[in-house]
Image 1 (cartoon, one colour):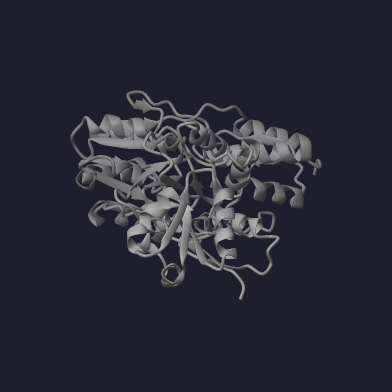
Image 2: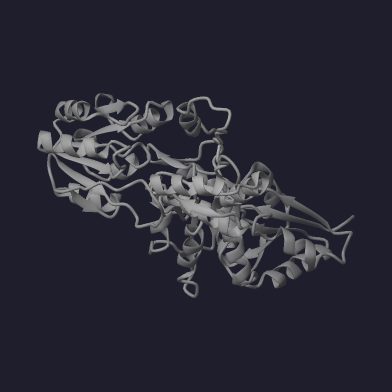
Length: 464
């Protein structure tokens, strides 16, 4: 009869999260081996078993002891937290037993921390995702850096294991800095503590804030969303469908010389697209606040060697406005005020304003007439009577009517320029006596429309 070894997955927290198959294996074995902490989690649940345990970084010795017990004729179970095949003991146990083909090794699957943590957070890993450990005990940090860079370029959702330890206090910050080169800082993230154990809890944050979070330790699992992820009713959700970009395409008139691409593109997608179409010039006329998109286009052009030009939307004069650098500063200002607030900045940042204690009473939001945008606002707790779904830009008189109807004392806006209706908003705010809080643009260089047209005519005109 061959020797028998079970590699058993405990789940994140012990018997309550183990599968029936794992429990049965532990009930039928003679000896249980494992890391001290994991053995203590289940020791009282399986009386009468003999336990062999040791400390951290003794994995090879642990597997050798397991093999020795099995060769004596004992049925042995070596235990792993989470899933034995995900940063667990399955691989090293098979390696140690490589010269003993008669030893029957059965790996019992379980629930890894990424899946358990994702369930607490909502549904952040509903589409393509990857797992990356920040521990450099077995993997060089240079390789970890490359994995983080590639995964964020490819817009994967990412579960981070071993995010921080006493010796690796700054590794999570380094990881976030790498990912921020490819992704927006507003991507929602979750930190799950003590999964399946006493003190289990979670918190939501963003990629730009994650690296400085002092609550992250070795008992935490970090989950980072992708560019589609959003917060709905306090849970992170990564939708599998893409509906918003098709709306923009529907606004273009039919033209045989215009091809509208509605697929969202990562850096890798953009490079592949440029190499396929071989453009003579890449003209970036994206919205002045579409910082991540512009950065991705610029980076893709540098990578592929295609010429790039940025077309700027002229900024407006904004006397009397309160100019802030970002939404966080706008919320900080509003927190010290009273009175109705009218948001004209779209649906993407509605979640940020839920940080105002009385947001559901104070805020009227104006968003695009899209089901996803409306669902997002409702799911965040905004009242139906205070949600306006309309396509802009809006004339001054219409803005005045809306601002007065909402009783607006404060209006939050971006500088979308004259074409985007900002000047009409500014004049309407002055008319109703509301203070306009302006999210400032990031400084950038480029040419205005007239300069771009002149250059295009010079380069590409046939003289006809």
